[in-house]
Structures are given as C-alpha cells and as structure tokens.
Length: 295
Image (cartoon, rainbow, N blue to C red; front, side):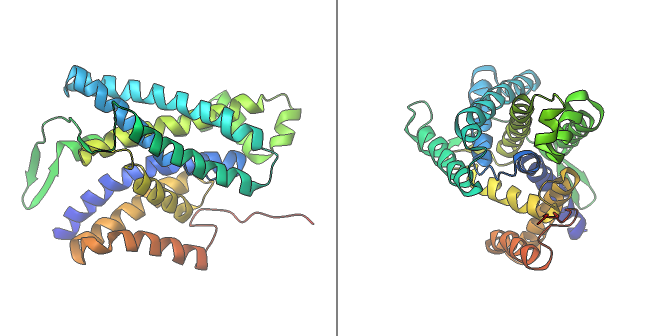
C-alpha cells in the first residue's frame, strides 16, 4: 500500500513536471531552442496568482481568477521574450540563443528579487484549505486531486489544439520545415510567438499548481522545477509532446519513490542521474526520433 501511496504522490508531482516540460518540447520542436527561461515563467505565474489570491481570497472564484490572470501575464511574457530576445537571433548560431536564454533566466530571477513588491524573501502562498480523503491506509488530498485533474484537462486541450485546429496544423508544419512552411504562406513569426505563448500558459498553470502543492513562493522557485522538467522533456524525447508528458510522469514517480524508500536527500540526484543515463544510452529519449542530417 505504501507503493500505491507513493505512486499517487508521484503522479501528482509528475503532472506538474509534464505541464512545464511541454513548453520546453514545443519550443524546441519549432525553433530548436532550449528555453532555459521557461522555469522562471513558472515563477512569474506563481507570483501573479499570489497577488490575485491575496486580493480575492483562495476560494473557487479566487483560484479561477488566479489561473486566468497568471496565464494571461505569462503568455504576454512569453511573446515579449520571443520577440525581443530570441527572434533577432533566429539565424545566428544556436549557442548564441542558448546563452541568451540563460541571460533571460537570470534577468527574470534577479529582476524579481529587486522589485519592492516581490523582494528576495520567500512568502507563504495562499491556497484552499487542505482536506485529506482516506481509503484504508491510502490518503489523497484535495490539492492532489486538483493538480491531477487540471493537468489532465490542460494536456487534453493542448492535444486538441495541436492535432485538430488550423493553428496546430501550422505549428506542425513549421516544426517539420520552417522554410517550406513560410513558402506555403504560413505566418512563421506569429506561429512561433503563439508557440511561446502556449508554452508559457502551461508554465503559468504549472506554477499555480506547484505553489498550491508546495505553498511558498520566491524569485528562485522556478529554477529546480524548470531543470527537472527539462530532464523530463529529454527523457521522453525532446520535441515530442507525448514524450514530454510521459517523461514528466516517469520523473515524478521516480522522485517520490526515491523520497519514500531511499532518502529525500537523493531525490534531486536521481533526477539528474536519469538525465545522464538517457543521454548516454538513448539521447533521443523514449519517444524521440533520430534526426537525419543530409551531407
């Protein structure tokens, strides 16, 4: 029964990792860029929700408003970052974009620390009252239920957008061949901006859920979940949307099993050990496809 309890905890944590990993994998699939600022978008979303919940309260209406406001703000951040930081470097060597992504991450983290209404100190995140439902020796909280259900709904919505909408078809075309898509009349710049916005919306939702599960916000809170979501994206196959979901759940379950049966001190080490093993054995990830390079 302890295994089942840790499995439930792992699915809850893995849902959040999967949401964040989807942003990494969509951006990489479109422009071959690892957006290391993505974890800090999570932090922006969590703080936006923090201020909304502080003003309205942590009831159902407050949580709904927190999700909507944080998603709008993070989408605006994603579009702005893509337009100002990444678009001018699109034809530059990939290393330039990678360094810029790290710089954007540092700007967001340290910019938040010097803002007077945020500051460097952690704050308690307002969340709904925690209620535990017991089924024998198993226990699941209302927060875990909310995390799992909302994550599943957002993933289904993303799957619908990508596979059954005109804009999703354009995203897949740009991902397959950006130059051919441009020649066919697809507005490449707006599709890439939409991809950043969509990934940022998922990061915002992940930030609100993460702060609800672990009720504390600080300017560096997005660093570790962002890195672990990157590991999940690589594990599942960077560029593969089903792979990002699968990788997030595997990583969340592996982390909670490590905490439950070995030691919580090893949970981070296990996560990054998985990254090393995947890169050594199967660099394309579980569902990733090897790229063919023509000479």
